[in-house]
Image (cartoon, rainbow, N blue to C red; front, side, top):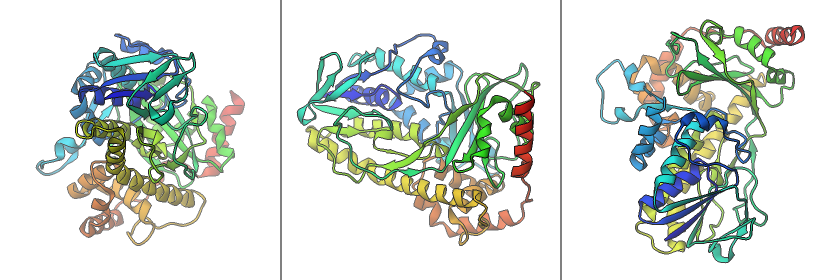
Amino acid sequence: MRFAIAGGGVAGLAAGLAVARAGHSAVVVERDHVTSQDDPEGAFDVVRKGIPHFQQPHTFLPRGRRVLRDLAPDVIATLLDAGAEEQDVAAKLSGPRQPGDEDLVYLWVRRPMIEWALRRAAAAEPAVRLVAGRQIAGLMPGASGLHLDDGQEIRADVVVDALGRYRCPPGWPRASAQPSECGAIYYCRYFELAPGAKHLDGPWLLNPRGDLGYMGFNTFRGDNNTFAVIFLVPSADHDLRVLRDDHAWMAAARAITPLDVMTSPDHARPITGVMPMGGLANIDRTAGPGVPGLIPVGDALCHTDPAFAYGLSFALVHAQVLGRASTTHTTPADLTEAYLADVGPEARERHTFALETDAARTLAWSGTPVDISRRDGCYPLFAFGAALAAAPHDDHVLRRIIGRIGLLDRVSVFDTDSDLHDRIERIWAGLPRTRPGPPREELLRAVTAERVSS
């Protein structure tokens, strides 16, 4: 079959690789002027107007790493050679390893590098043609191909919608959906470790993260001794939007443990300014009627709060499912139906999960008392915050929480495990209660004073 792929980001490039390696041909059309490069350093100079979150952190969850390992092991090898790092969470287990523990691994690498490696692999694939610098004007009748802005037509048997969460061409057929705001704005900054410095190791399961009761923070490793720090701030808290200022952001980091150490000059230096990301929503388009021969992948099908980091992994999952389905379903209608039947249930499940967790987080940050210590309290935060805190102290909890947040397990595996819930409740009850940072008003005074003095 001939595939025309609208969009040359992670989802589009992965889809092109998947169908080509399944024996088909693919043309990948990308609006930005991007080309395949041998040198990974050039990846960070690429202008991606079509992807506003291009420079933001993208976590390679264990599921995404496993899928890429199966779909394109050459891409994994390229990333590791270029400075990506693997983090084996199973190393924190106190007991012997079990079957499946080999998948408890995160791949830490920045988004531009991921796209660079995928584009390099796609460009080397004989059955893939990359078309850059061309916008898609519309869909040909019957999803038989793409109209481009220069009048060119890309004819195909199947069109893949990899246009992401943002703007589509006029009249582009997508299932209608009701957006649900995530309720947070993200303020991110990247750092590079100082010579001789190492990523902090501590009692946390993955990387340092915390909740101050009115906002939160998270950290992500990157490739080549880099890392990102993100402040998660309620959209409704306009005062905390001061964190978009570099000086105010650094003042907040100095007031929070262990960000004070991570962002100190002796440990690391900033390599970007503050990068805000807002206007985010959860949108599920899996329940709408599919257009035969038009197959949505990645965020075009369903996208969720970036805090959960599902986007990259689901883009790869969808590409893998599409490639596999294309080997047994030979008509566009059958392929579309089989693909949606495969990926739809899990996407809907995770969309619901995101909605529930976002709502609980917004409630907690609004000052409403929530109980995360018990399963019959605020369950979404119990199953996230309390479970993450308990995981370093219990191997069963560790495996289950990584399976849940890393997309290795369906949500029900965690939700129906009463023994797991007992363990989390018992461990949480014995943990110390400390806030990693000051109260809101004290933090605001510190960041406002820093901004004024600068």
